[in-house]
Image (cartoon, rainbow, N blue to C red; front, side):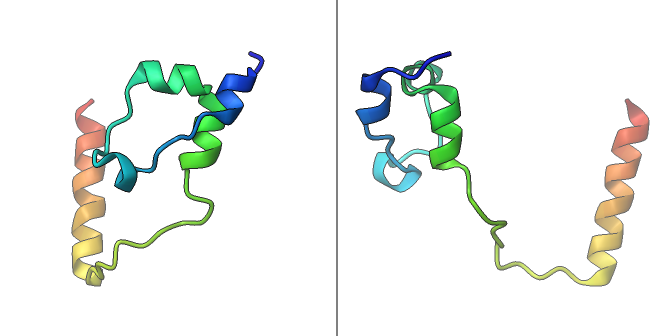
Length: 71
């Protein structure tokens, strides 16, 4: 899919700018999916600032495995 001049020029607001953590599908289509992902996706992994203990990490892994096996 080709990117039009309008898609290239229109500003894509950040979550902070728009005051919402949801983007409308029609906006993403208008901007172009590839451009949207390139501009919005983080370039590096980000950290939440939450440190879990080894026990908490192990329990989370166990819960995820249980959930996976239920399907």
